[in-house]
Length: 323
Image (tube, rainbow, N blue to C red; front, side, top):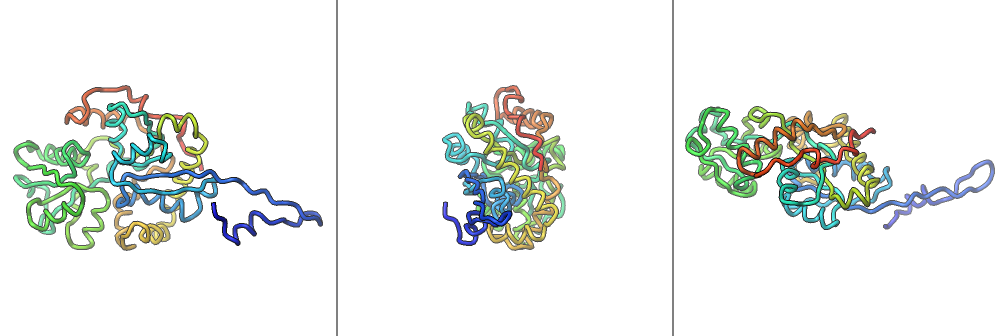
């Protein structure tokens, strides 16, 4: 690891004590790689960005490389392979991936409740206007697909007849279809704040209006990682939750930091904070009741086929995180 001249002078020089020169203690830094399923989500990526920028990881003796991925499946492969120590992703991944036999465990709640948003065309004024229309989602069976169907059910509609749920992929495809009026709404995370500021869509509601108890985002690690790097995992989590505290207490300063990395304007970051800020967990505590509600929903929609014991999905020894 390269050390700046100033850092060397602070940590590696000798200090005067009781009239003599005494060597200062230099603490070795462990190098770890962390990842998120995507970059373009304030609540998901923000704490990683802030923790790195403000030195919260370094204060725990960690040299961290942060790598945003393109989706949950790519991230989980890296975590299982040991290339990434800890990943943060949408919460349904823990239920889906463990059913598929992947040796991972949730270590903390990252974002509580449901921060996903229903984003509509600028001329749509009310949810009732979407009956008979199309709603864009990322893929069939995804979290966004489930939420679109739950929106329909909340209005007493048949999700297979009264609306058309269209799998389109990423945000660019959603916005292109919206501009061509091929869809009239799409489901996304707090990044909906960005497209709303650009006048391309508007946030009609946050999805906790239509879901039962939920967890938006989680932190997880491999079972092998727990065995070999439990202390490093705890240090990473302490850095992340220190960052969440900073984002809560000094939101404007955090927004400046995050905007430079995420590619959004500071105004857009602050708008996303209004959507997700109140939902970010402050100690990582996991609600098994919320996980059970999610499991019930995934079973109802056929995304998972069997009810595995929820206690096996979570490594409870890592929370609550105490700062």
